[in-house]
Amino acid sequence: MPRAGTGPDFIEALARGLDVITAFRPNAPVMTLTEVAAATSLARPTARRILLTLEELGYVRAADRGYSLTPRVLDLGVAYIRSMGLWDVARPHLERLVARTGESCSIAQLDGPDIVYVARVAVPKIVSLAVQIGTRFPALATSLGKVQLAALPPAELEAVLAEPTRSGLVARWQPDRAERDAELRDVRARGWALTDEQLTLGIRSVAAPLRDGSGRVIAGVNVNCHAAETSVERLLEHHLPLLLQTAGDISADFARAREVPHVETGAPAAS
Image (cartoon, rainbow, N blue to C red; front, side):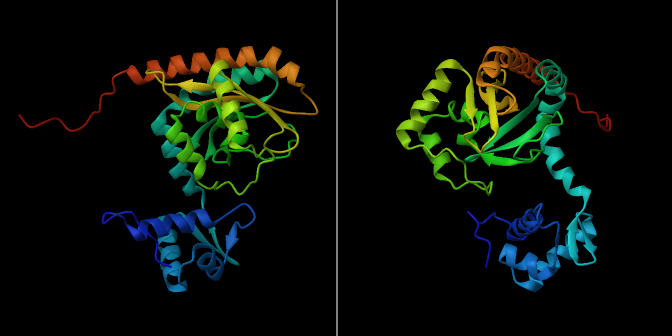
């Protein structure tokens, strides 16, 4: 099936190449040519040419039973995180927050109706969902998503939530519009969000927004815990004040970092 573009400048070959890369999943780390073609709706000859191109570029390697991604694919995601500069600013703050709460802490950004994790400092605990950089969850059922959805204008919120999730996960909490709007109004009013097993059983978290120098919400930061180990009272009375302080510190540092002028060096101009 041809990849549908949005205009004359759309590069179909690039889109197909990205489709092949994202076809690999945790349950399918090695895929045959036939499996790749089926997963991407590409003809076998097209899928083969893309795989061979990606192999030559170092993003894919031929395996015994097909093809697999190489660590070089991480460069694509890391380039985004580095361009934002958020991880460098947030890391020491997240590490201190983890040390003070004893819980895992993460930063995620909104991508359509989902959140995508871009930074995380974890503690070794058994949880029902594995989370790592790049993990995607439905935004509305997460505290990280709620603090970002609450900051959107009404029309944009409706457009975002009208899109289908690409997380592959169906959240436990499926509110109607009235319940959803009431929840986001509460989040907007108090400046933080709580989820109590709304995404899946056993997961409880609280999140606060991260802002740039203009006050625009650019991400969310959370404290995540297991519901059987940490009560809502403990989460709100002890962890939340520390989280709000951390969110303010990260936002201030990020704004300052963006204000620092960046000088690019290169060859001297001809006189």
